[in-house]
Image (cartoon, rainbow, N blue to C red):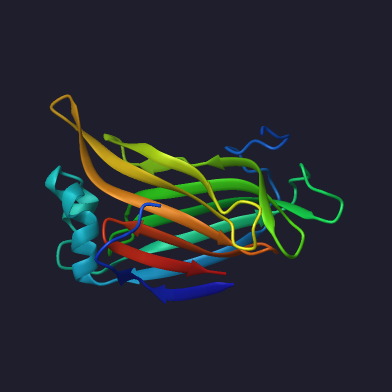
Length: 205
């Protein structure tokens, strides 16, 4: 199901066993369960892209004075077939949050991948969490944290805290800090929440 939601700006974002299915590679046939477009104002996009523009990222520099948007995608479901009790349903989840300028040119994206089992009351991790970041050539990233909050509860969260970096005169410069959280219930994925610096948005199924 497609949904369009509005990005929100906040003053402060809180930084919050191997299995048979790889956390890094999504098998074929996994259902596409969420596709949400998150719109940001020109002022929000200035906060998002100014550090990239400063170091010559054309897609960010050319966005000055314009709105921008992000695409939140989630794939989830079988095949997963790992680690659950007989009363549970187990699924793999591959979520992404990608930022684009007003012309639709991609700037960077975040990924969180995790295997979960659910029994209708609680959810628990069975593989991952895996947190790759996608950047343009010349940019890099560093995960400060990648893992689970509230595992084996009615509201587990998978996610990461990360830095986007740029190699300038041989030294990495931090362009900004971001984080993503995938919020689950005892039955499956509920929504995805992503922040970069002070600009945040929700992606709902």
